Length: 336
Image 1 (cartoon, helix red, strand yellow):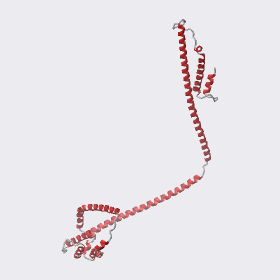
Image 2 (cartoon, helix red, strand yellow; image 1 turned 90 degrees about the vertical axis):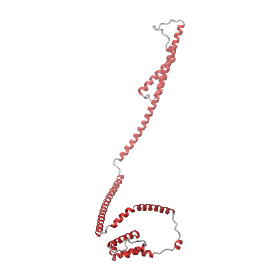
Image 3 (cartoon, rainbow, N blue to C red; image 1 turned 135 degrees about the horizontal axis):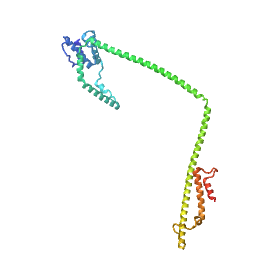
Image 4 (tube, one colour; image 1 turned 60 degrees about the vertical axis):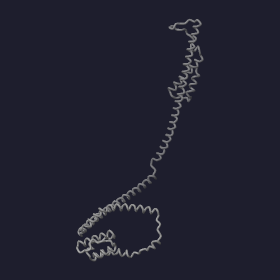
């Protein structure tokens, strides 16, 4: 068994050196089988069973056949000659695929570099794991534990699936119930839309009446606002007229007083006796004697203005017969 195993490994890699030349002792055979299995796993990517190889029976032959099959397939594979390789046209590679391959190569190289950096620690762990004695009881116990964990995980997943099925059934039932309620609500809504309420006609009449009343209210409100604005402007104009009349009367009074003073000075110069300040002077010409026409017109104008101001301030509205305050004031000015 040992000679056949070493021969097959050397057929694959001639540089392979067995750990021991003489496998006469049990320890040497165990070490040879372990190193050979490790080399086959690392180089050939073939996993061999050390227990079957050590048994040196029919099961050992099955393990050796794995290596022999790889060698046979390699020998039967046709090899291309140099002329064929030169004659084969080179495949054109698109730039996009080239850039993608370059990026993948860079990423794979970085990952490989990281793994190689961890190789020192991993090698020690791997050798320590290989050096451990491979007991069947330990392996069976480990496998039984893994099987139990997988079974527990499977049962848990099945329970979750059952719960999900139950939740889906409940949700479907709720959806069906809500769908039926929606259909009933739509049917009820259509029936209510087709039915006319009892007091709908009266409601329509009242709504039309309210709309008419509102239009009237808006119209009257606008009229009142306009009349108040016009009254305010008229009041301002009349107040300006009253102020102008008062200023005219004051000016006329000052002019009469100046004329009286001037007349008194002329009388004194002509030799008329002067009276002391404490005594009452003789009755001179009055304002009516000096300018009867002006005084009469001013007095009538003042009476008309006072009457108009009293009307505006007292009632705030013109006379009820429809004539304006300005016409009434004009009539008063024409009276004696």
